[in-house]
Image 1 (tube, one colour):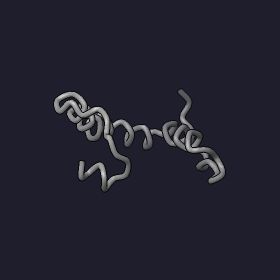
Image 2 (cartoon, helix red, strand yellow; image 1 turned 135 degrees about the vertical axis):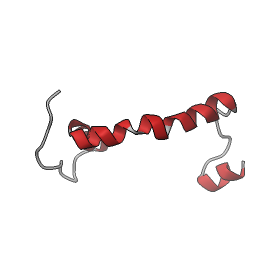
Image 3 (tube, helix red, strand yellow; image 1 turned 90 degrees about the vertical axis):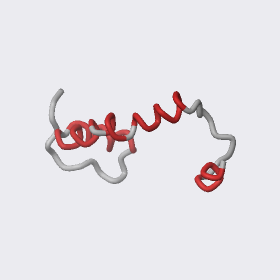
Image 4 (cartoon, one colour; image 1 turned 180 degrees about the horizontal axis):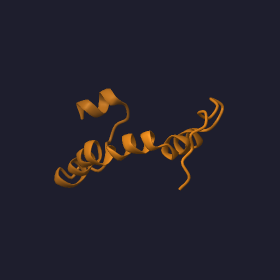
Amino acid sequence: MRVATGPPPPESSSVAERMRSKLRKPEGRAVYKRRKAIVEPVFGQIKEARGFRRSLLRGLGKVSAE
């Protein structure tokens, strides 16, 4: 994979293009790589150990109350 060191993409670019640009840089890859150890295990525990796969309500307040 080629490492991009140029300027960031313009604000008019799509979210996917901005993320692609971020992941091409070594710093962006390092930050995103930490997600595996920090965020993903929490989702795995919620889904597997607690059996919670779907919320019946929408919105943070309603889901928190559920």
